[in-house]
Amino acid sequence: MKKRFVATTLSVVIGFSTLGVTPAAIHPIKASAATINLQNNQKAVEAKADQLIQTAKSLIGKATYSNTVYKATYPYKFSCASFLMYIFEKNGVDLGTYNEDYMMQQGSYVARNQLQKGDLLFFRSKTTGTDPDHVAMYIGDNKVIHMADSKQNIVISDLNSKPYYTDNYVTARRVLPTLLPSNPATKGDNIVTKAYSLIGKAKMGSVNNTSSLSFTPTGFVDYAYKSNGVNLGTTNLKELMNKGTTVSRANLKKGDLIFFNSVKGSKTPSLVAIYAGDYRIIIPNSSGVLSRVLFVDYYNQHYMTAKRVF
Image (cartoon, rainbow, N blue to C red):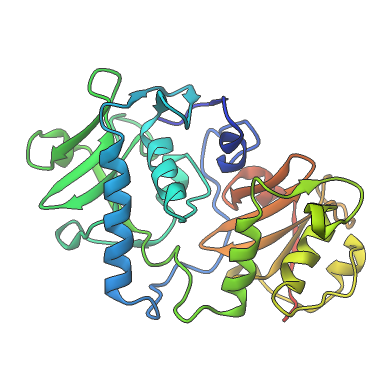
């Protein structure tokens, strides 16, 4: 269910895909379509899927359903989507969102007769509209694991057990391997991995101090790039926006810098983000280092430009 969640732990804040508000409808921006990462072999994908399934099963009987509260410590509270966001995050894969409609635009389409472990399946109970209101993860043998509702909580269901799974089926998306780093990792992968590793650790402020992991937003970006051999040469936001070459939204790649303004139409940037691939962005701001998705209306409306700096 797409609801506004009450944050009960720090991990809640850094995992959400909106700024506390769930948009009423999807307004996708143009970005490069997700493509299967051929450099990730099938064994690596299967191993990651097994980890996800193991984590999901370990929460059976320990978590209860809530579409208003997300609690990532025992006793856990999840909606169907935040449950999946949590188990992916625990296994080093960032979905960047707890909204089913945003999740449904990640990864790549997969036919129902070609499902594999780790695929996400989307369902819609409403008779109007096109947005999904339920999501589950495929675990093999025609079964899914999902946070079903307040009566069942986390369950494993056979897709042939109820008409619901056929009548209300919308689509399936394969987010493995598109959300995983390349193998071998690219420079963009390494920058993104470094930035992700600082979520919950780096502190945002007015000075840059690498020993205490205290940064200004642009200082954080500079640190993530410099750690991977890319010297941006400035921590001034306007100067940073003049670096590198301009990249269209349709051609974004991991490690590109994306700039946003605070007033629509303004030519003055107020925010910089690192593109993490598959519509995800890593944003350093006064709240810390955040993971978001570009589908959110705010980022679509305040998008200025993107730059490739290596």
